[in-house]
Amino acid sequence: MSTLVNDALIFAGSSLAVVAGVAIALRRRQERSNLEGWAQRHGWTLDRDRGDALRERLAAAAIMQIGHSRRMAAVVRDANDVVLFEYFCETGLEHDRQTHRWVGVVVPIFCELGRATFTREPWVIAAATAPGMIRIDRADGTPASSTGRFTLLTEDPPAWSSRLDGEFGRRLAADSPARTWELLSNCLLGYQPGPIPDEQVAELASSGKELAKLI
Image 1: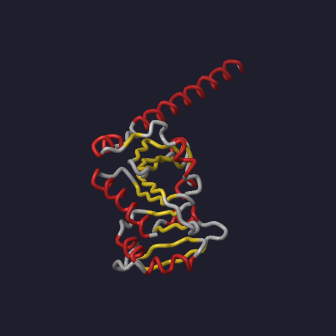
Image 2: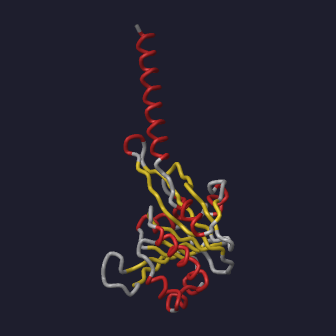
Image 3: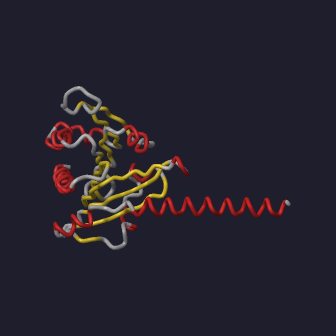
């Protein structure tokens, strides 16, 4: 009798694992990125390794600190090594699992400023808070609302104060409130929830290039 029970439990467990695996596979088949088609129409090159090197490059970013099952759906780049990507991660387990999608841009930049994060997202603030990072909440000039302020997390507040009072700060305040920007050791990273339409993909890339020039 015990053998039959054990066999039944093993079969049930195996069946549940198969069902879960199929559900995950179906969910990921639906994660088709619009970036590949956009890249072909705009002369960007598709990165065939699906972003393994890019994930390593962005390992310190706040967006890489949350969730599990992190993966790139598409990575494309232009002739100046500016990169656009679509990124997924998951939170929760089993039937409570949720998939989260972002579209981001990476602009190469070389400067001596320390790491900084500009965001209105509470989860980004939590993920980016670390020893040595100082938090500054700053009005952005928009009408009073939940998006009327952004938070700067930085290792070097004095270095950013003049930039925030200048053209960089004005450009940042005018940018989409859905976006987060992070200055890492070798690049400027920006991202927002996806999917987004083609015109916003182009605008995200343009915004990243403009902000990088102003740093």
